[in-house]
Amino acid sequence: MYKIELENRQKSCDEIWKKITEYLEKEGHFESVNGVKYTVTSILEDRINYRGDKKGTRRGKGETMTIDEFFAAFDPIREREFNTTIVKEFIDRKQSPFVGLLLSVGLAK
Image (cartoon, rainbow, N blue to C red; front, side, top):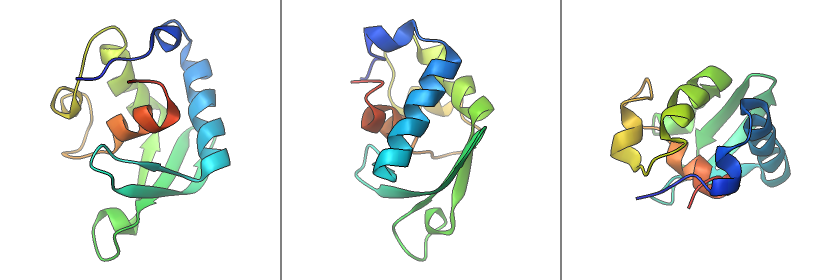
């Protein structure tokens, strides 16, 4: 189980999104909890475009995570323990590197 770091629970949505985009601009990638590497292809004001590094897969073609999608999943777990199964009910897709993004950026442990 994972938990949002105490210092990040109190931050505003703008502060959290800024932390994510700054990390991704600097690093250019993040990993899923299963170790799949995702390369960031672009960062816009309200969305992150990324693709999985496994060629020939659906993830390899590219995906987008909007700020609204991010906070639809982040806000319900801000104060509770979670895992990928719990987060799935808040994400509009069967799989997502959402938890891996939180871990990569340092928002959760």
